[in-house]
Image (cartoon, rainbow, N blue to C red; front, side, top):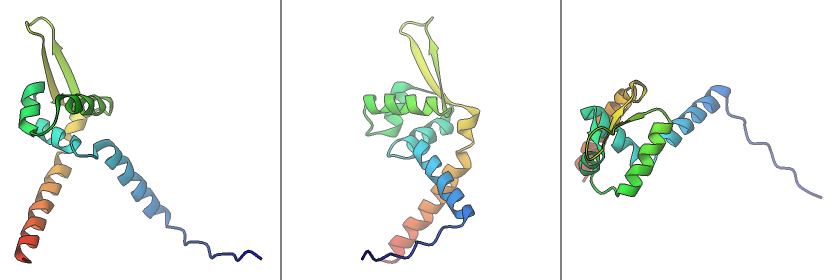
Length: 123
């Protein structure tokens, strides 16, 4: 005879909706580099590829290129090519939609600062 287990309690719809929304957000901006790239761009508004790579530090050109492509696909970054210049100049800038993440980045900065102070004070 197979013993039936009790059903796990179902999460309220609002909780499921919030978790789903957080999952969506983390999917788009998660990972090691995306928030750093967005932060670097919203801080200065426009950057060339090499300037952006230097400002972030530690990111390879290949990874930066891939991350920028994903951010562009998700509407966070706009790529402008100036083909009339020699050499061709490519600039990246945040879209208006990309700039909407500024308060989230500021909140993370504030929380991170407080967290670091808390950890240091407990030592």
